[in-house]
Length: 279
Length: 279
Image 1: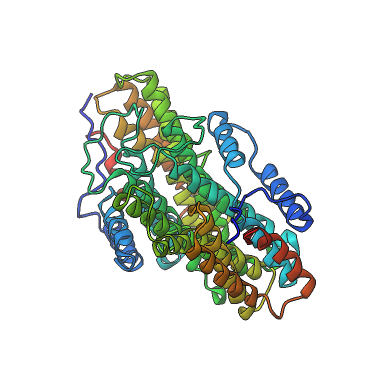
Image 2: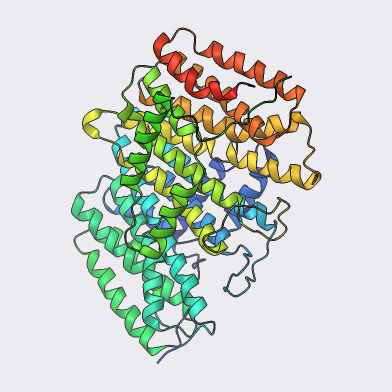
């Protein structure tokens, strides 16, 4: 068995499609999240927005939009919102709470816990405001934006990422040695990274005016990609069961892309799957 | 100077207008926030939704909708969302965080801090999902719902309630004796209760299809009412400066109601102002 390469959020520079999408999301975020009054609130919000690790979900949202024939601009507000949801969740997951059973975080806390709690709370409405403001009555897209709003609020809520985080806390309380069964890690990855990526891909397809079949194909593609990422980020060892599971998920993901424009499928596959290969 | 009666969230039962609005909001919330799978997440979410103290903002949202000629049903999803925002904020404000300078809360914590952090994080998307789902393409109200979404996300965000909470933490760090100057309490009340009530009243007017002038009148009315509540809830003493300030704000609030239907103005005044009198 070859050693596997854990997924890195920063991917190689020759992935031009991936790179160009992320540059556009970054530019959109920089325009939206500025340091303004009140400075003691916006300065840490700006810091946490841009210092949080990047998830691949926002880029997947944009890629799904383009895959169904939409224009990149249609997906940038939702993609930016998804980054802010991810940054909020990251910030709150690393709060030093009493009774927390999580291993102490090794990340640098630039602000105290009161501030990190507040800013996490500020990032979610800020992202959803960004999305709601992108409504343009002349474009007749308000129903699609509201549908995306329901998708995102569900994905980050009690049946999605919040459930994943609950499950994460439960797992680490029942087993502090990090030796959870792979099935439990799979379930956690499905609820957390899976829910976020499934939502991201479905939202991209909705905003790009894909049909219902395309939206559901993208939703499943995102779910598989997200689960793979969750598994590979959490299981840091050369694990045979993991390889079998990931290979199976990768095959399922690839199948969902059949029927779409081949050049675009190739661009997406090289961006989201090339790093998921053991090698 | 007569002793003043601090505002109680539970108002007297003979206020039938107020009572009927709150009963409808409660019924709407009960239908939306049910105990379902995953139970370990939805059970505490249900508990915190219904055990959090009530704010008057949701009822004000419904009253403003009816004042501009709208139907109560048009405002119930937004009013319910506002309660969930308030419950989320209440839950996070009482988290036992390291370095917290707030006086230890006397409220009963039914769940541990990890769970209260998570559920606070779940209540916000849950409320906004409720609002987004209320979109009915046949009613042609999606642009109004998105406008309300921007209003709510702003009010709970970095320039509204989050700023109020930041300011609250700052105040208690600079002065642990609770003897802050009334001007500081006024500023805090403006950002926290003021922002929430101004938003609630403006949202009600938007959803009730009020014109721009009516929306701005309602926004100012809500701001004054919210500020009065914040001041009276925070300054628990017979304070002459407070009386002058509250009387001034009450006069300003009353002025904003001129020009509206007199019977409705009477219903609103008796609901929101009768409890703000020193007596």
